[in-house]
Length: 609
Ligand code: M6R
Image (tube, rainbow, N blue to C red; front, side, top):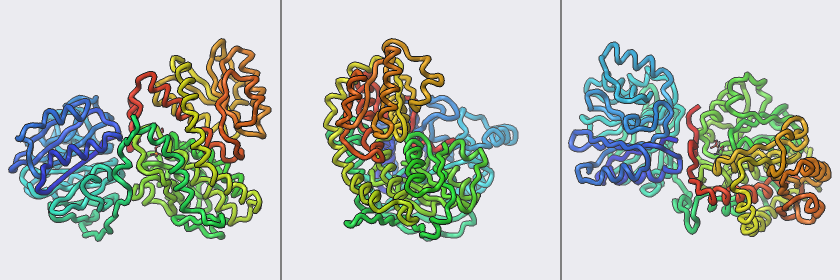
């Protein structure tokens, strides 16, 4: 998804902005551009395709200046051609803007600009109206023009603006799209995401909705909508920039799969005392408040929603509170029965997913308490929630989510058990054995990672398949859904996941000689049922690869192959059984020579609806 970078200081704006954009590559993009203010003149360059194209075209010294903005674009309105890339210029060439988000009333504004001001638009984008609007409103004071333009814009935006006549200022505005300002020495930065500035500074201001920022080389001033100056606390980024390096790995996805034992350990570690009690620092729910909750809605998208599916089981089982998982994009429009006794659990790796954020706001408007599970400190989801639990996964760069998923699961276990413990709905013995099981999961994930060679062999056998099914029961349904999503997003193989009991109600019609099934059979209490499901599809000549716990040997007799995971309690299998599935998807994508970290049509953080 789009990324914004801005720089003002004494260094080379071109170098710094381009390196910032490079650090945002993981968000996905299809074109890029920069605008540099050099001695009161705006120099603009935009290219479609790889950032390298832009870098090559801006090598010449003529692009050297000390202030500039840049953008990587992921096409929403208008195809990914150079004309549609940002920055966009006003008709008179004095204003340049970069924009993330969507201007919902852009057609209305565009018509007005054409009719009343005779503006000729150069692109098909909604973003160009911002440049043109500021251009016609500009009468010598950029800040006034920006404020007047913002008052007419509807939608979601983070915008960086420069003006040829004001070589000392970058102005930025934010509404429902992430934006930060980085604090340098004798220079300052603007960006949509922290990694863009991390090579230069660790001190940042998180810009809030409705705020206007005026950045000069020596100062960053933040104002609210009424132009009241705001004192903002500096946030010091503590995570390591090298976490965003591939290190010894070929791809970020592989690195992130192998980081899971560590991520799970860290996410657990901070919250478990030596005597096994759970301490949740960012969650302030008292016993009375927990007793008052009569319903939990979990809202999330994609992989986070699959973690949410497991969350439903955990909340109902341990906290004994009715829970539902809602896809965020549906929740926000279906008028759910939310009130003051509802706990809304939002799960989001990035904390910037537009659908999840809007679902959160909808639940808040209706009076729910918002508890979020998030990987990014300072993100919108984290800031707008009443309680937050951070996953300790470190930055996740690959578009396909892996370590965020397993650490989100850990948070769900801890929150559900914490609530159950407070309510007295988890017997002591059960609680103690689950905590012991959770503590062992990092080592068990490590054990699974050691089976990579076996999984690679299976990948060689199956990567040519055109269609793959995943089935399971109980907590294996969520794992099947997540495994299937992983496969399709990085291999582009059509895959389908379904509760095994549901097969005979329709989907079994698709099974014929050689149809490939990955069968999740990790739930002891549903093991017999799964064996029957395997028999059912084997009778129709399906090829079956089962995933089962060590020691369950009967599954080998009915399956073509078995991937074994270490013995563990049914309740914690989701944390372990997903790992071979991630590896399998990874190796199949590798054999298909896919762009694993940046699959086609996908972006890391989906900040538009
Ligand atoms: O940042 P979020 O967790 O809110 O993102 C939600 C989904 O967009 C994300 O999980 C997506 O499904 C991943 N590509 C899955 O691998």
